[in-house]
Image (cartoon, rainbow, N blue to C red; front, side):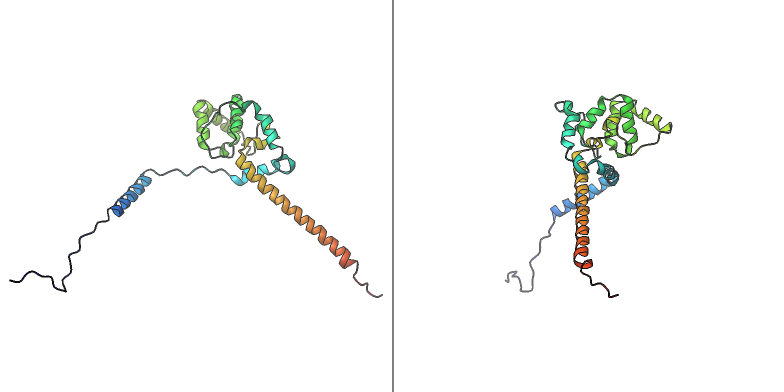
Length: 214
């Protein structure tokens, strides 16, 4: 009897493959997309960086930038050993926690004025935290708006009129200072080159230029 030998043309049966890891990854991706569609995330708050930079340039120009550490220590010395008022990080230019500690000590009128005028630059989450601590704050801010008070986008409390940079976080002020002093150096070098060019023209060109015969 002949045995069931395999012929040369016969091919071994191929087992069916199943990419379990690929399937799981696809399912997770589809699940994540479905969740994100059902729970759209709000875009993170962004303040007007160019506007803040324009307002800070004169605050960090010249030697005033060098005096910032001394002015900062003098202004906030009494808060150095106190626990911070806010421990959460907010996405606005006013990242100096000592400034907020100072503001929290002020009366409602002073605090309302700053929050009202600079509302567009303050992270909504920070403003919400203020309203959570002060249930009447929202009503007072709306009253200011309804009374027709025009917002001052460069507003600073009277105590900071000459030290506006002390309201801002170090990262914001440092970046503006770098841009300001870099541009100042460029203009300085351009001025030097113009003076040298004028000197070369007067000494080596105009002075030795042959006079026309009369």
